[in-house]
Image (cartoon, rainbow, N blue to C red; front, side, top):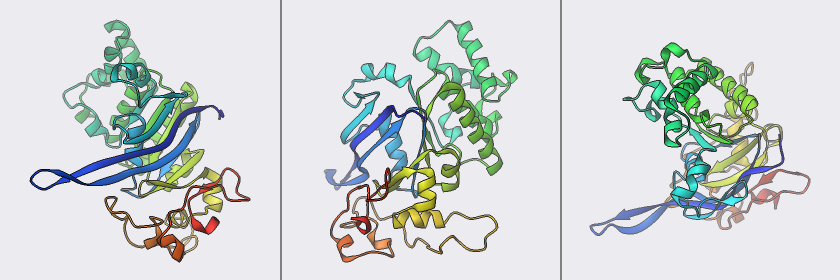
Length: 325
């Protein structure tokens, strides 16, 4: 894995305004991503994990400017891309692609598989029609599909095959970075393993970087080099995979890991069970956002928000918790 930074978020925020009343007055904001900073290194698979509603998918889409950020900066290869116009951003989009959670919803039902996979070539005016068709055939074989399936429609494929079409479309332009947004969560377990192995093989062949978003810690542990843990729009812990699973620091991370079933054991690792649901992002708790659900909550946690720090004796391990101040 390289130490070169391919993507960086600096104090990134994405708020969705809420309007109410007859005059649709701006009354509140949904703080989906709330002051997030981290880097993605070239060639790695960076995991982004958290419960549903924690803002991880919104963060992934904001990084690719599918959503416009409310504040902060997004840097791709050192260039601030959230200041670029759509025209200026177009050549960069070739190098930043996304694989969505539901392959059926992300594929146009009126287009054949060949048309879907070759669409990036038409948009960026790459090659003749014959060359585009030949390249599409190569992509099909690369992701484990048959050439005889090129002219079928999405509904004629299984869920796993549809996700392979999505992957073929994503790698068509040889991107540097792919954001995988819950890309295996809608698939059967056996098919999940096939798709994960395919993604790992393609990463080695094409020297790609992944930002892998998932709520499934067992999947994250299998594919990722470093892991970012999010809670209610904020990063609460950030370190490498082995350190996170063997020596996690934040009570939220520890509870998530304890919730992962362990083969051959009748009990959870430490018996810590997370109570309650993620609070409303329109009205987050005061102080530490996690304190209403935290078994180790102190008085300070209720009033003061902790910052992301690297505790003494924990090199390259960042945590946002008053226990380590």
